[in-house]
Length: 499
Image (tube, rainbow, N blue to C red; front, side):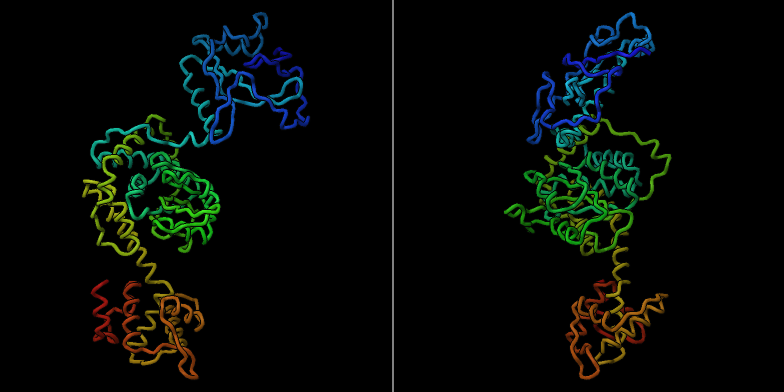
């Protein structure tokens, strides 16, 4: 195959060709980098960058870069002959770096060949290349308000699309859709629920990217820290989509506080309120102390190979259409969301607060609100089960067992002994010391005192008995079960009514 000695760029400048390769080891001073004379700099986020190109040029047969007619064996001519049935166009627009004969680095836009009728493919590549350099320009945003039909119709479209793009189950796609819709109403809610994503890394990335298409002003960040929050644009409350399996306990607290208004952080000499919706991928496994409060918890399963192969990316037009429909839904219902009286009274604690915020955002759809409660009920049950089996709960159960046995004073060592008995009966092998149990009593608000030479313990007066029973009810009713020890305990009967 014939080699050319020079190659001409779009500006007419010559670059060393295959016959005379440039010195790739030469050192180039950054100040020597020059931009092509035809490229007009554009300003994005304060940075000047080369223009993203001029688009489609004349067909290859009329291009000044085509090979001479006599060179029948050159690559350009052979390539064109293989596409004899369709004319070949030349498209410029991807800004690349090259080196001049004077060994100066410069920008240029090389011409790429594409068959007539396939111009959209290269144009898509050009747009993607430009958006990597200007990421804020790639954020999905509405171009206006569009008709969305009914709330149920909009939710159905969103859920089906979410399920296809994230390769998740119907239950998971429904929870993700409830959360995505709520991001459009954070300024009308008193709570912006968080979203915690746990599962394989690939599936976690799929979910974050799917959410990016449908959340309000989405920003994808690679880690969770104060500097990253400071640099975000808070003029319009963003939806932060965070990939951070190594999140610190401090940032867990910060994210939890930022789900409600009023908690401020000292940022660059001033105070900022980072209130707003945030979704965080935390890895394949996560401990309870790594989950921010007021967060919806979604666990992902590995994607089946078949579903992964069937997945196809959404077109820009489809994303834009749904963005505009969600904007139309927001404009119509923002005030109604703020004034919603929806109350998921069947749920408790954080789960109820999350459900109230999500349910308020599905206007005129009692069916969707009921579906939301049904989806969150297992989450509530699991949370209660985890709470009723933790060490604090077992400590309360042991304390109540001793109190129901008629003890007026209970030593911490006695509580520890009863805790170990209960744990052993349930198949656990751990052994807890009196010191550990003393710390757990203090953690749940039961302050011990010295009881003579025997050591520290609890005086089971009426006030302490009432407090222990109320705490037991809060921890899933541990120790309140009716048996021969507490059959006639009025406090057990009273607290059992409110569980």
